Length: 233
Image (cartoon, rainbow, N blue to C red):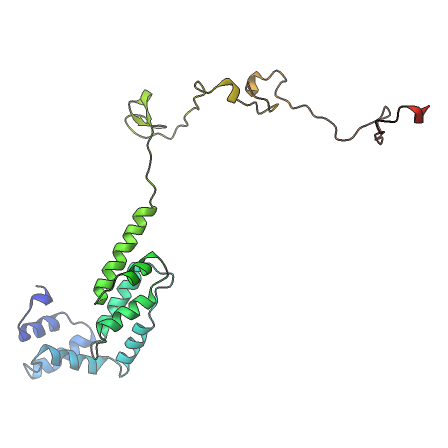
């Protein structure tokens, strides 16, 4: 039986008493056993339960937590769940809907969902929650990249790197048959037109000295072009 479907006051009280546990169950069944029908209505049961187990400043604490609730680094669903729990705990003096909407909007993290909420006016907090959830879903769908599958004719339309009956982890060789000869570069000598395995220079780059050396192997300062060998005669 669902509690929301119970309309009779006596049935609601009996349903609530059957779901109590611990100290609350002992407290409720003791007067009910001595004086049957002591809880005449649902509101009377709730009031006596709050007076017996909740602290005196419980409503003030919950209201302070509700007004200071922020999303921070949490996910949007976690923030919405906490706001709903705090709103349900304010049973004594419920704040008006425009106050709930203002507190909910002020606690949202800066982002597309908050911007959309400022554009669309909502009369209740639940409507504001629905607007924010729809905007977050649309934003995530727009940022999701589409996966492009390239078909391989040799494998019967299967994606590249996988066989027709299932995916495989084996590497696929690069097909250089369609590549032009002028686009192939040798990684040995750095020239175009051939690969390293067919390099005429053996795949080795020519290394030139950055400094001129003389016949004796020591470094010599280069002479100007307008001077000949007169200085050495």
